[in-house]
Length: 354
Image (cartoon, rainbow, N blue to C red; front, side, top):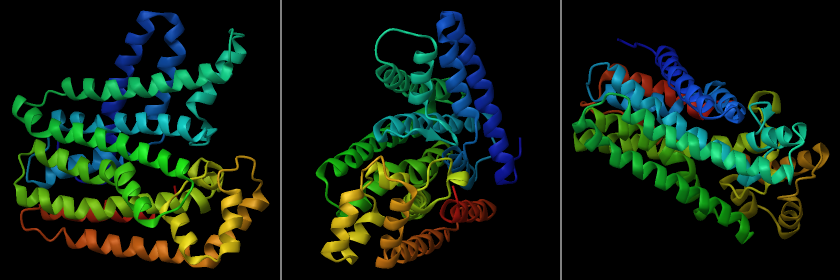
């Protein structure tokens, strides 16, 4: 199996996820017919529209170390998408988001199921509980997919510690993100740390190293992948922060300005606070975290952020981090063709519109 391009790798990952998810969904349905909505919802969530950044980076890390294409490794790398699914489902619960990919978020979907089925008790609590459990199930599936992948015992020993670190760092970053909102203050250094741990490490650097470990990569190459993945991962999250405030809902699948309504203390917001006078800061603080903001109010906050120069500063930082990442690809141990693919992925991660 020789995969020569990103789109081909993505298609192969989609096929692995489709096969695995179909089998797991069948097992759920065999347990009880009441699990049909769970099987259907989680299958749709896994298979509908993901960019597959994490498994792609993982497989490129494997190939970049000079390893030959492997269907077993591809399946193991595909399991990282299920970690991402868990993170998205739980993130929507924590943020109280109503939508994801232009569809109701899972807790809203199961809240509606409760209402339509005329179940007893709180529809909202049922929806939240269901989404938490579905996120947990996706995380459990990620372990199962790796264990069923067929990679060797040696590969497991080399790569699984990185997989465990990746998941622990993700949860740590998510907690720090929640805590930042509770603290009610914007701090640039803390915001950048959250960006690195909540998204940067688990989206790019850890997947790259997971794949490279499966190939038995040298410490030198692993370090180059870290030097590439860490700044690129932070830039990836900064782009996400900008899209969370300025993104078009028809493209992002979430309402424009959703991060403002959710009160996200992102790097963009911290930069705005540093550049604004006390009057502007007070106005932003008054609206930050208000779920009832209308379009006019969101547009006003967007204007204040842009006028402060924070948007331009954030874009400039993304550019610097991208340049830093790309310079790390100049390692003779890294396969030249894969280095070009990594450059292609870096541009896709930082120039995206959704």
